[in-house]
Length: 436
Image 1: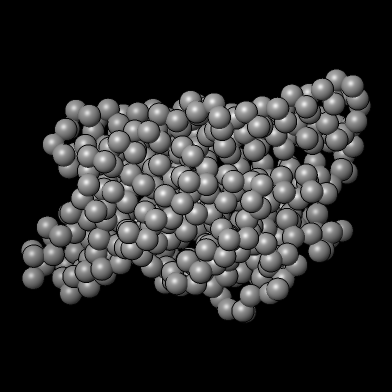
Image 2 (image 1 turned 135 degrees about the vertical axis):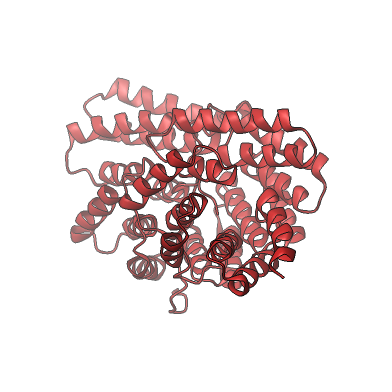
């Protein structure tokens, strides 16, 4: 479960559509990867930013020559979004939003600028607003594949999965490209079809634009993520290695490689790759994972530093999404009242399965097992093969005194992905003998 990912695929699709101004089988397991909010400073690897830096300069020159023309501002927004994606500097999205605002001042009905605004609404977690914009724009642009992709993403984040499936089916009918196949992969994963998810993401990687190695590497990373969730760590690592060959020093791929090494008990190498990734972009999910590795290797002080850093980063960008912070606190039995408050607030805004899972876990940690079980049913409603969900469900059943149900869920968690969480998986192994 990648809680720090948010709609990176939107920017890939939007930039492809605006700079370059077959249908899959019908089933309920279609469409949309949850890309990543990397709420952090820019990457230290400047080779990632040279291309987009030139694009930014070029757009600024165009604006300087024609300040009343909309195209320069759209080009600047595209360059900022791409740079944010490549470097992990989330603040660049705010600069993109300012460029879009200026474009719409000049030409309020400019379609490209409105697409950028739709995309950025999703990036900043304004999901309902983004969905409304996509629906409004589709009235006059009913065959625009990008808008169906944005609609898919918004519905996924809001927990309206039936509408998400409809939207992605239309998108892939209109434009069966990398961005639509990537969404197909994610929705198949959500609906408990890991094999189909892997096949679709593999296809996305194969048909990605060879002139955009970062987009291809992104697909390979998420192919690895799907393999990892299925407990196929060797195949996951192969995908991460391919991503690093395609786009050297890619921080997502370095982190994936670190997780795969840890899952195979090579903790020393895991620390190396995780640190390399975080030195480029200090991603909260990976910082916490590194803290867990330090905990397992008997370095509690180093682990605490990582958890404190994750809390600091989440606090700094908490106006966007604090769910990962709530999960961290619940996992460590810290600040449980605050964790529950965050989870309840997020659940009021969005009814997706990942938010429901975190709320259920926070309720369980507060001893409210009956309510936790009801909310956990929401998280399990798509039959997603998510080991973390099974673990939480098992611990909730244990709290209710249902040893049989707890045993079934905990075994299922470890069978699905024995390294779904380094510390919580170990806890599951310790709890199972007690239940017998």
